Image 1 (cartoon, one colour):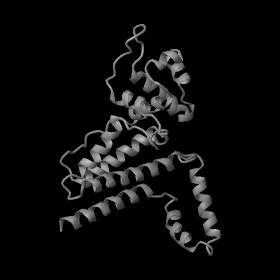
Image 2 (cartoon, helix red, strand yellow):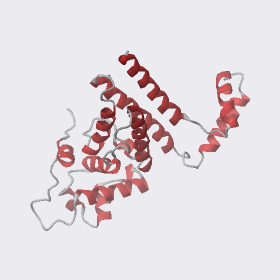
Image 3 (cartoon, one colour):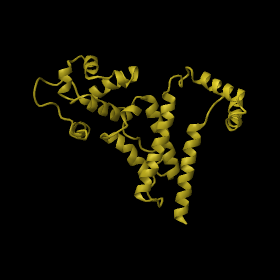
Image 4 (tube, one colour):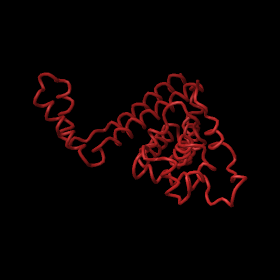
Length: 238
């Protein structure tokens, strides 16, 4: 039996009216979402619960239930609030490539600001209006390029996948200045010492070692995706 998403639909897409019964409300959905976001930012999504968020707001858990049906809906509200509406492009008259590049960098920044949102935005679920605004912006940037509707959607999904992959890597332990550089050095040392078994890796890692081990997966992947879209758009134009 499928999961019931009606509560999330009402919470994310319905009018944000105050509860009709009980005393004068001391809360609103934005305050609740911000309290959950603060908990997730500080301690991770696994530490978010109705009890913890109610405590942060100084109310009882039962009081919180008057606004949010349960934890799943709370997390959906948090994720949509944390990611936020997609900003308008700096230059609305820029070409599709410049707009998508700007879009991808902004989406990556949003996920890096709230790494737990990666976990909160997977699987069967109801996306909120803020999240959908990102997809709307990416698909809209490709209007007039000659790509079909499904192709524009697929292009946006492809870019989202690259953004999520890089954000997930940055989220890994040590990636923010902890053990990441040491692990990279260890990998380089192992490949160097066993180069006869991994000749392709040894040859590929040698330039990176000379550059201090800095990878360019984000920039390389982004530009190659845009190159591929450009080649397809040019082929359609011909």
